[in-house]
Image (cartoon, rainbow, N blue to C red):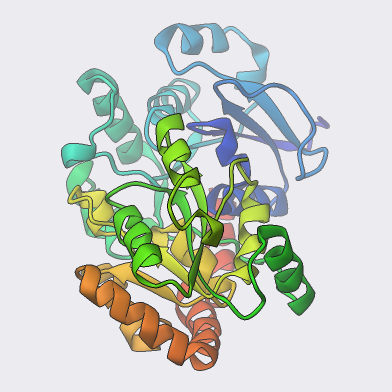
Length: 367
């Protein structure tokens, strides 16, 4: 590092978030404003990254002991800016920025309230909320989460909150050849109707509706890219009566790979029936929803106010039960071409308008 280089430290909950869309946006914005970015997370080791030589990875432990050891290292006194994601990393962000007298900002991509409070002790959670109060600004992924964050922390009315979706600001460009190649890889006919589920696959994410629909609609195919599914559930998925019409992605895809694979889908699921506050204020904080729409895939989503834009842009169908779910599949399949075009309009006008990333970059530059 030269004397003129600024250093930023960014803390992640898990290493896999290094390339997630919102964290990628933060890292790229830090790089664009002249920072050398040091990324910390448990189980993250020093290695090369896709971001180039100015992003360096390190291991961190979210504990008071790790903070005490860190303060003995000269590196931390040369850091100019500290940031992190929810929730466990935030106590570290808050304490380091306070002790070192450095500016900080927070990506509140998880708001662990209600039945979704997480496993952290109340003492640690209080430090996390305090870190949000001390930050120069907080980032949430959907406008409906602004009030949720203000109430949860709580934050004063004048506190700056920026909305940045769970979305790449430069999504991969799909092609016809990609779609054909993926269908061959999945052993799915070119003209088949494919419904996809990506990410968490459970009873609050529409897993039961999708599996039942495959049984009830013999012409339907499915691609399932599950996360957090135990071996028994994977075994049962592989042995469904309709297994010949289901492609199960066993290996975890990178964020870019998952987005590129969406070109092979016709309908995507964004079902959230968990009643915890975070899941009832999803909107464009949903990575899977943003992925599907950005890649031109109409969606079926569960009924909540944060998804009202889906009706407005006619890029999907909002449902409340299984009967409506089946009807939505039929409706989208009959209007697929127009709804694909509507996805592009929704993405450019609502999810990622031209000023979204520059606004984030400007906020980071201002501190």
